[in-house]
Image 1 (cartoon, rainbow, N blue to C red):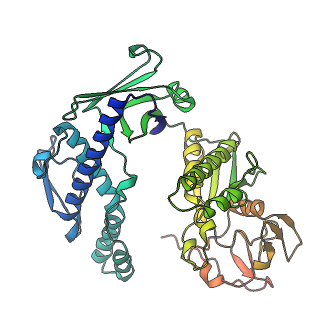
Image 2 (image 1 turned 90 degrees about the vertical axis):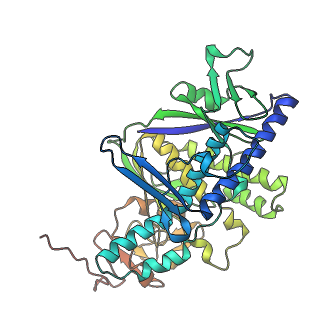
Image 3 (image 1 turned 120 degrees about the horizontal axis):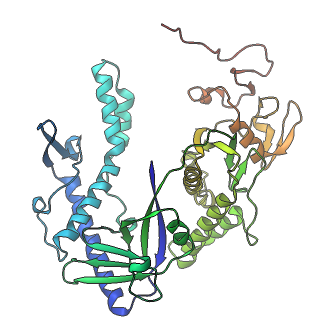
Length: 432
């Protein structure tokens, strides 16, 4: 398997003419991209292709209004009535990126429709799927977050001995883009790209915006580890990451995730200070993840945090927690090191004692854990990470029935606090 990594480079070496030409290209490209995405979302597109082996003609139809969600691999510029100052090759890049964005938008609804068709063929009820389909609506993406993607059709990448410009390591040349025939972008290596250069291949595909260029590197994924320990990990706003082997995040330059989120909630949304503090949070999370020692770990079990923002008392601080960033950074680094990552349900794991299995809401008080049954004391995040490590009986379908109750939770199941009656007996399916 292959994995693609990205290195970010600031465009501070461009002269005024190049910077202006690049800004014009990015602005026009985004206008074209927005038009193509809206065209695919609101119009019917039918394309035909022929299988070279079987000579069978296949027609794919994309009609979002009628739930025909088969996005084509390629659409010619001649099929989309639109005039632009960009060249045909540049517009082809924009169409390819627009198709990729549309595929991401329709993916969830397409999977739900597939399940609905499967249930309908078996004459089973589709009420739940219909409710999910009503909630899953396809809408326009956030265009401000989309960066232009440029491939080898209109660009070349030179590095190492092929670079003819002094004091630079990589030169990206964007050509055949319309009015501006050529834009040369010299780039210097940073610490990350210099590290990637030794083990990865530089691809002829980049992302650009007004201030940065994003180079892409491809490398082989390492083999999944077969030796090592299985560890649990708990993520929190007080301590960013805590592992069951005793590793935990510390402060960096006097700050941790708690103090940084306190700063974020005080800033005015959209201000420079607000974005600067968000970057501080992201950098701190990246530093915490990089400090984790994966050498003796073959499998990492994470808590699956979702749907906690539905509560009415969720404040600004918790909204800027950054749980998605922590999860993505952990998964990315684990993939690079061959560590398998498993997400699992997190209900009651912070309230369970990892020594006796007793679950009680009073066990945990902020960052302190004190078991009401066996008097075991520990850091609350460490105790939760130990519970993620264990192979406990799954509460996926019945966790909401246990709300407000005290019980013992083990590998075999869970029982009343008297340990006399099993609340949900463990049944085994008959082998036919």
